Length: 74
Image (tube, rainbow, N blue to C red):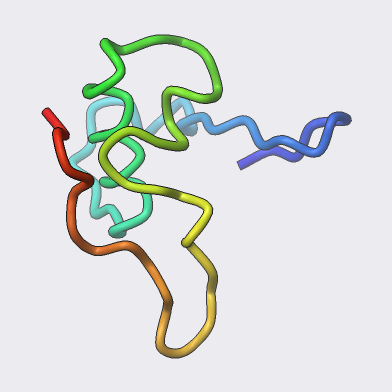
């Protein structure tokens, strides 16, 4: 993850990780679901909502994540 000047984050893989199986966490899997739900739009909003509300993602114990898909999620 790379912080951007506008406060957002840019995600990228290291060059040597392109063909390696990787583990992921719930947050990244939820963002993938949102992106797919939003027809794979390249816009930032497409990763933040749709199936899961990423505004509920906080690194506290226990995490207050939205764990169930939103009504109407594809």
